[in-house]
Length: 135
Image 1 (cartoon, rainbow, N blue to C red):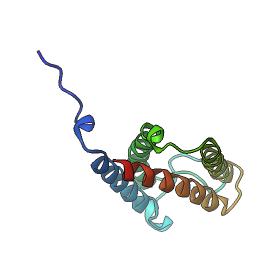
Image 2 (tube, rainbow, N blue to C red; image 1 turned 180 degrees about the vertical axis):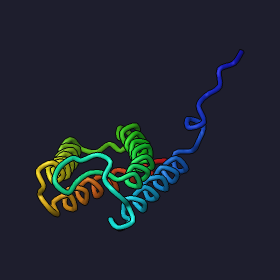
Image 3 (spheres, helix red, strand yellow; image 1 turned 90 degrees about the horizontal axis):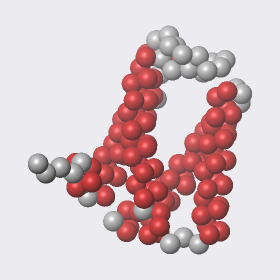
Image 4 (cartoon, rainbow, N blue to C red; image 1 turned 90 degrees about the vertical axis):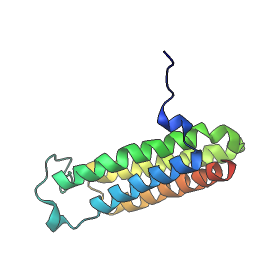
């Protein structure tokens, strides 16, 4: 009996990136629905924060797509041959963005999640463009 390889490993890198981006964008579209259409919160994280049932559907789409993108970025990082200082700056920017996002949710710092996710998104786009070029 011959063991079959997973479908993902046979798929070209650019196709993987496109499918992961579609999942993320669909999830963001669901998460961006107006609060009036969402219904009551299922879980509460803090004052004014917590997902509704519709938000959970968006999270179910964004999570695998986002993790797939991160896996493609990390697995292609060695081929990018970025200098140590650039990697440190990108890692610092990503960490700062993620920290601002988490702090805004749990500490109720209104509006700072936009800055945090914007920073994380810029770092990911930069690295993803490098992976795309080398694919």
